[in-house]
Length: 214
Image 1 (spheres, rainbow, N blue to C red):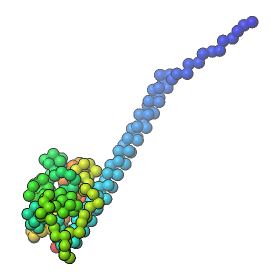
Image 2 (image 1 turned 45 degrees about the vertical axis):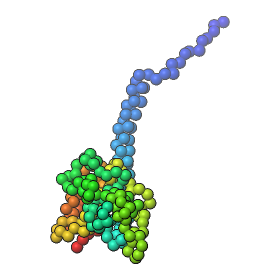
Image 3 (image 1 turned 120 degrees about the vertical axis):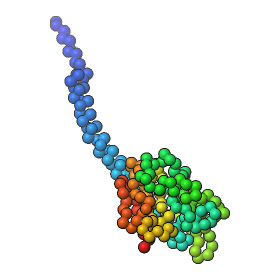
Image 4 (image 1 turned 135 degrees about the vertical axis):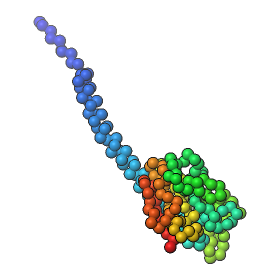
């Protein structure tokens, strides 16, 4: 009697099959990665747009209560601080890719011209001084905190900036607009600090015009 032996099957992939699978994976990756990157960038811009509006609302609320835009310094002098920044630490020379030749960064980084939004809107300690606090009694008083927590960095890890200088500078042409601004994805501040009535948000900056002086 002849005994038949079952034939052995090779269940592995052939080289051609492996190459085809890899080609399909690479093709799908080439399509998916740009799409995913685009969605991530869109979500960051949407978050930035929402946060500049939130910060603008907080600054506006303080203005309505105190009667001036938050610009008090550590000596209790109003209309002194030129630029407010968000986040836990002041900007440094490496915070932004470029200042675009504008003074936003210089004002924010200056110990005399800059202050954090948290000091002005969260803790009522202008430039870190509790002795310089806005009044907390009377009809015109600080009714904060105006932020639910510490002010956020923008989606790219940089501070938002607010040029409150425009609220008290009386130049005939310049400093007409107050912006709440993010330098956007490229980290460059494109919107000029001159803030004339005819100037608009520039480059890929994300910003809102909080106030326009006549």
